[in-house]
Image (cartoon, rainbow, N blue to C red; front, side, top):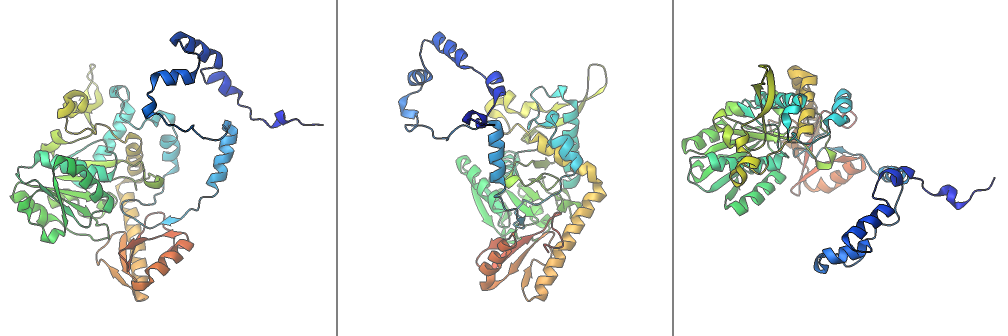
Length: 432
């Protein structure tokens, strides 16, 4: 039996049959607009000054089967590491029932709250569960249906504080223990608004100089601090206190509302949403009831339909850009709905006691690592921590960092003599 080159050609008959336009359709369309080719159409419609001069070089086209094979070969080159960098991104276990029925279910694919939301009662109910979860964890009355990520949520909280604050100051205090990406995004957001950002130690903060302040809880290097005193000082001068809080840590730590915080933000990534190389993840925002009309994002509420039955709907939409235009509370009038729903169902799946047990287990693993390092002669800080520690290793930083990489473990370099280690629910005894 003989074979010809045509036996090995890719076959994607479905593409030619179902994905248009076909060559004959293109010819007809070009004739209608009065040109003979696509190149002529581009020449007559797109100025040469904004066009790429060199031709696109994508290589030869691949069929669907060829592309899948190629992508599998590329994926085999990946090296899977245990990430202990922390900084707001942690390994998490996605329950298979959530992965199959939410993440992989086309009925939930949309990343947004729909533009005719009342037809999606199930999605709105799931988002209301998310808001309730966030309100319970933060100890604040109102939570929105999620924002884009923790860093941008921190920036939104800053601008919200400026709108609400009674202080006439134009400066905003940022805790030096905030995650670096949070500080960077707040600085970027503040510059065009004319807000002066000051990064410093909370103990040295002069509240009278700021319209608001933001604190990371726990801090980026692991510190757990009670900011009740700092927030009380801010309130005395009409300023607002904001806390960026880890929701899993809040299952066993004092909530921001109990500290007197006016606004709380953070990421719900570690509630069953994979790290995904940095995103996307659902951020949360919660605030006091008196501030709800200044809050960005979408709010799901409970109402009554025309038949007198309970119904879910988007509430307080007059805050949003499609109604108030340039006077809206924010240009972020959306939600990471798919990721928020996953986080919501993760909390439902485990329940309050289950979430607390996960947090306690992570803390015990971190204590085990800290004690072992201390016994080996290394200085470990802080004294009070949840899942993150910082280890003084001196001139051994590079050696230990490289050896950890060889063991497929990513650590965080802190300065030139320290290493940061963050544990999560995926950290196994063998890794420890």
